[in-house]
Image 1: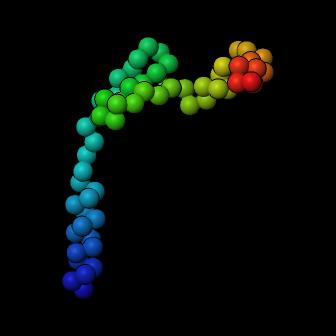
Image 2: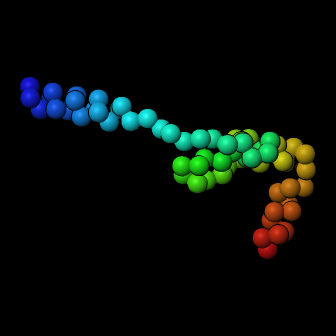
Image 3: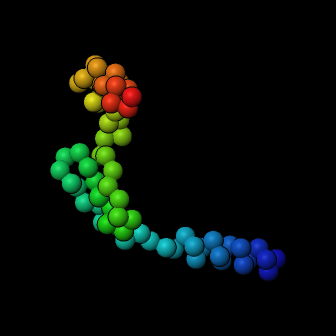
Length: 66
């Protein structure tokens, strides 16, 4: 019974932690997280969005890699 109480209490303490990150918009396409110091694309389907506007995108990427 004592072990169960400690487990539940520990999980409650862990669950209390809150995040303090500020998400900052960088233009219309990027988001910056000031806590993790990372920037990512706001569009989760960025490749699909770009490929829809440029049908040769995959061939251009392959050619640039070669």
